[in-house]
Length: 636
Image (cartoon, rainbow, N blue to C red):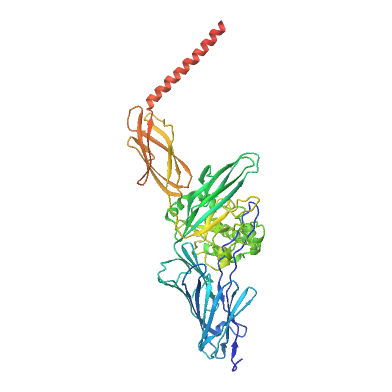
């Protein structure tokens, strides 16, 4: 106590973040994890003698990005203005607490009377910076300023061709003051903000500003897409005594993801797209045979939805509707488990995010998926799959089309990677279909629960899809889950600073036989088109033209055609001429590009009919001659 006025000596700001979960799994068991965002939030704590309403606190926080790379620190500046609201209270001491791994250096402090000496103390996993006001002033509406400058590492990350920003915010239970955060970009950086949670209050070419943010963590991405180099290994084994086949899920195209295939070795014997849009490759294995499939390629993840996939999504939904509202073993809740007063997608998302608690301890054991019902019975035992299962189950019960995405959450931060190089950590998140916009919207209640970042209103560029689960909750298996006895690292992903080049190529083959089907010389045939390029062809138009015949259909559109995939197109065409044998020219185009030209030889129906009659007559004569000779031999 000083001059009969209460001296507050324990004002603290706490910065917290969890590290990325790490998992371990056995043969054919998926390993679930999350990409470990820094969960950063400041909490003002007042001792029992005073309340936050005894003071008005205004915060001005500035981040100066000088250079974004793995080693460059960021200059951080705090100005804390404390206004006394009571005549007999003032603050003497202010502290900031943060984890030991939150690297801070070159700490400098000032108040209204000059430099002060911040004290840094580390105990356990926490470090505390404590500053004392040199001459705090008391009295109603009297203000005391505190200035803190330091260098912080890894606050801003350059990943491939984007910048990623994760900023702490102050949790203000009683918001009696203003709070402004400003990010100063390097001059001439050319970086434009692509994602921001929440939406900035003010944006220029050199500054991004948030005023009074109400979320735990600010997340921003500068750039419109991210590129990743992929190398995935699939270990296949047939323990049986008979030949079998297995279907392998390669990374699919989605609303926000485009896959580029460099090579698949060995190539699948059949490539096809399943009902959910998975790119599936079929492999046959002999008895007791083992086979390793290596997928090499890349992925681009976008801020905005892809127009080509967005257009196809609505048409595909017409076939998917029959299973996107159904229940499964993992997506099933009893009537008593369905939450009351929860009906909108936002409410369902909030329920999953707030009800379940991420259990890091489960990642050190074999993970058995609990499903939605099991998750609500044991809400403190959840990992990412349980968050997805609960959201999907409740969403489907309320008539929302929902599905699960399984894949990878990317981080190039060594601290946030698994301890063992032989482990592959996978992630799970849900999507729902926005019928108004006719596209799939990804969500991540798991990462919001652990990071404080809003994953409902917008997404990020760190989620890479390996498999889509709509019809079944546990199939197909994503890359990283095809394991044999000896655990290996089967997922290698590196953020790239270059964009991929799309190669559009096809191979077309016509059937060898053209058979007349009617007297008007209408022939039926077909051709096979294979995608020999490196990306999925979406809404691929084909026109079939001939100056010598009327073709039906003369135009068709392939909704999708994956790399290596083949599709057969049946055709009927009516010859314009009455001549017998004739070669007709057929041209297949996609828009203005000629894909294929050939000359088909057609046999006139009447001539062929004559050949058939003659042939049948010859056969009859030969049969009759056979029986005549047989009877003659008997008589002899």
